[in-house]
Length: 286
Image: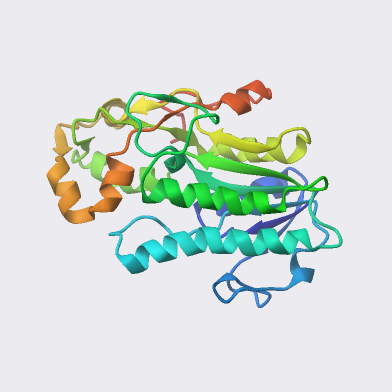
């Protein structure tokens, strides 16, 4: 399959590109450095995205950092505006893709305590939930008889090369790891290897469309994740980050990410026959 990978310079894209190539696909990378692609200015060369079997969009400003008004605008625009531009262009292509896969996140559900969340669960409240809702809505603009659309609601992607785990490992190796607040919040996660396999699976399964939770079948509470990570490194993890400090330093971002509880399950993926090789922690090699 000829695949166009948009926003492929981040953590997921940098792994997905060689993985898909190894699987025998022809992959072209489209980044902001490409002269035919400037989503901030609303510029896209139709020829640059014409005649691909699939387009995978992973574009998005990092959510890490204090959420000032400027930061929140960048988070939203880099997702919703970019996806809208892609979808609107796909609709007018002479040879549109058979499938458009767009990133989303379990942040769609907001913070829901112990509630079991599947793809049928309602949208939550808060900034991230609203962004994910509109992000997915933008992707589905190009749904047609020709193009099926998939939105991946990503959990925390575990990889030693980047993301949350890469930031935590140095602290845990020094014995400075610990739970966040009381550690009762649920964390939805997926091993990088399973995420790559899931994307490849969805690319080729022509009957699947809509929303897919890209998470392990076994979400875990923060306190248990902390214990498992510390034990795997043979280090203590007695510390904890109190809620008031997180709110003081990170403000709204802490409430929507570190303190939020999302107990999401991959109902659609399992129903469609996808098998998770790394469903429980600890994951070997991570």
